[in-house]
Length: 285
Image 1: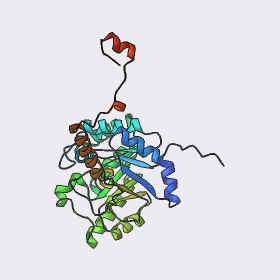
Image 2: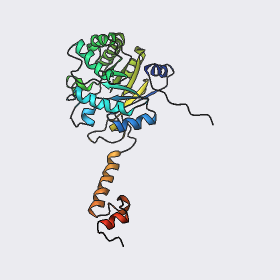
Image 3: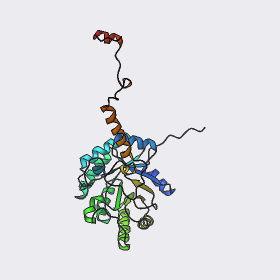
């Protein structure tokens, strides 16, 4: 049998090659070291260390309380667990809006710890910031549609691009980001028809998060697809396993085993030699 080819590090060039070949790109969020190891071994192409970790990991009601320090901590954990995957750092709320200089400085912190790219939210309104970051040598990914950091201004967590005017505005946002120099963009929570219009309007990599199949690949929040976040379950997510149910069963069984003294058993305990037991005056007969 032919030898299996050793997997090589995913790069932006390889992602663009996948786009040219119409090979769908797989993308998941990731927030910790053990999950990064599992994803890396499974063959996932990209991971996003999303500011969604503020909700899924840290328990905040929205992504907006996430700090740069907390985001960098999660990102470093993921980077320690990856070997092949393309890792994108997500810039938290108010880490790039204040000035171009601050945006470049903060994005540079993600790149300095080993990220392959960074992502920020917004369309035409952040195009000048994106342009400045790209000119500084930063690989920037955009994010349009439902942008959680702007949810209050959007009227909450609602589907975007549902009207003709709204769809046209998102196309304008996508073009503005492309002209500013992004290598790709995430389109979140829009009707498939709007996703198609965006995909056809730009040449950069377009990824879908609840935006239908007409994209260069798909992203989902890992906690949603594995049933590990009980707060809500988005319509656009296919649940592949229900870890909440599995873990609940395991924890209940553990409680029962400890209460009934069925755990630990002898096979779960360390042994002391007969000679050492005798020294302690313990009868081993």
